[in-house]
Structures are given as C-alpha cells and as structure tokens.
Length: 94
Image (cartoon, rainbow, N blue to C red; front, side, top):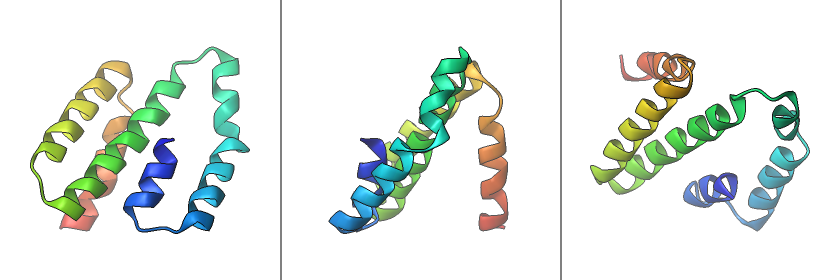
C-alpha cells in the first residue's frame, strides 16, 4: 500500500502503480519474514522515510520533516542501518 502511495505522490499513472506494487509483491521482500529476522520493520521504515521526504518536497510542510525524524528515531531503535540511508542523502545536499 505504501508503494502505491509513493508512486501516486510521484504522479505515476495506474500502470506505474500496478507495476511497482507487483514488483514488491513478487520480490524477495516477502520472504524476509520467513527468516525470523527484524528486517521487515526496517524495510518499511526506509520506505516510509522516503515517502515522507517526497511528501515534504512536494508540499513544503514542516510536519513531514517531523514525521521523517520520528521514523529515523524508530529506525535507530530497531537497527542502525537507517543511518546508511541518511548518509546516502548527504551527497545530494552538498
């Protein structure tokens, strides 16, 4: 559902939404929970973090920055891998 909303926010048409959703549905991401690892929350938080950044850039409302900060905080409590996502954004702003 969140993948659908990301494509919708990027002004994708119905074909793009279906294609992105099928890509997630038939990918390896569904098998993550079979290994009993806490990686499924991490994948969700990464996607939700980027969704909140896209919403911020499209609307310029500060509430989306607060939401992304909360997501990063929850992600740091889960695993520290969300820091790599933040480090990946640094070259874009420098």
